[in-house]
Image (tube, rainbow, N blue to C red):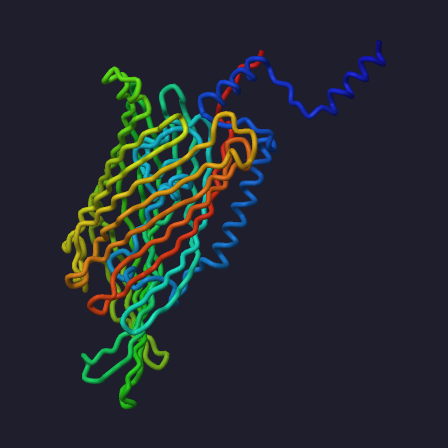
Length: 464
């Protein structure tokens, strides 16, 4: 008998099956059904997080190598105005859906567009991404191609109470970016000069938020945003008259401020109208408050390597209120279509200094689509999610009578790499501006590689 007991012990030690209590097995089976996840035999969940951290280190190294901000020609001249190009990143899933999803909620992703979308989380999630950008710009004088890489940010969210839809979010992501290089001929000082203007930097957002569902079908969300960052601008002045000394103007401004985001999602239309066909219809809305940004500015004039301080001071400008609404519907338990409208009411008086362009209200319209894997998918290829979208953005700048607008198309894949984890690939192809009136037209290609991983932290299971 002793020999048989030893043989049974050895057999169990060689088994790859991790013993679970019947209660925990039933919980996990139910969890698959509720999440519409695909139970595959990938690596253990701890290994998935190890893979995520290694991949995250790779993204950070890639950002350090390719995404270092320098005063060089690696962006569009339109980022010169205001606070630069506004970054709109809804998360690793929503990027390929043209960054639409104000009304989307559920498990398996972090919704950075609307904090109310966190309510569906059933496990801890972490997400991070890297974006490669390529600008092909042309005007009446010629063409140029510029490229750079940027870290898209990192987000960490976990459920506090699944029954109450309570979740908590920590986010660190870009708010805007400034990257430009341009040349001009100036004759205002009594002599002709060739000037080269460079700019880099932008604003970053650190956010802390959460969600709560007070009753069935209604979700509220809230997020605190701390915005900060510096913008460097450089003007090299090269006079054609040798009796004038070449010089350089340097300007640095540091910005900081706080605002708040409030969001809501309603998905109780089936009960409200007694119509089961409306069960998967959701309506979302989000509002971000206006804020006064404090600005500390330093300006220097450099001649023959001798630096003279022109100004050290402080000021402010206003980031205006923004709001958006969105609607989404899930067809056949697999196909999601989402549409958003977002508006930010920019005005000339938002800025403390005179802008060289006309400032107007910005509006963004977008439609996104996703085909999710089938419930019975049992292979890597059948577990891929397919995404696409299209968006039109009327930016807040207008030069002369020419509005600077962008039309973009998007697509991407969600590749399963483990239990509840994915590598998300997204591609944007956009067209901005015009060559009319000596302006610049940009063809922009953006490629995003992001990682999203989940694990059951902070959840207690009863063992029997």
